[in-house]
Every structure is written in C-alpha cells, then in structure tokens.
Amino acid sequence: MGEWKDNKTWGYGIHQWSNGDKYEGDWKASVKHGQGTDTFANQDVYNGLYQDGKPHGYGQYKWREGSIFVGEFINGMKHGKGKWMKDEQRP
Image (cartoon, rainbow, N blue to C red; front, side, top):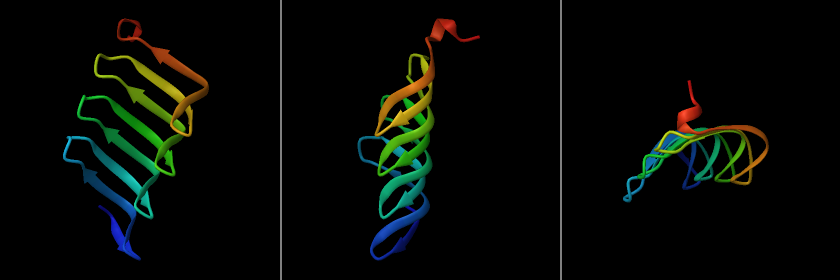
C-alpha cells in the first residue's frame, strides 16, 4: 500500500482485498484520494478521481458486460453531464 506516515498510508500504492477487489492509485491517510483505479471482483472497473474514499470528479465506470459511463461523479454517485454507452452503442 504506498508509504506509511503516522501509521497511515499516503501516496501511490496498491491494495487487494480478500474478496478480489483491487485498488491502485493515490492514498491520503489510508483512504482513496486522488487518481486511481478500482478493479472489482465482478470485473467492473472504475478509473478516475477519488475524494475521501469515493469517486469524486471526472471518471469512467465500465461494467463487465461492456457498458460505460464517462463523466462527473460527486460523493460516489454519477452527477451532472456525462456519456453513457451501452455495449452495442460503442464503435
């Protein structure tokens, strides 16, 4: 997991949970914060910005069946403008 400071992780690091979920990216006080990628055990992937452990800012979420949302997230939820493409809509 990144560097340790005051018994917490900071900076770039990778963590894999026992359920198969994996996060690679920036940490702040042992919380996802900054640019990173979550690869979930179900094969969904989120790549983008995090704030306080949740997607926040510009990012892309791709579901395992191929649908993609690209746009803004606030506090872990899709918000504002974005583009949703179902698998059959992608070029």
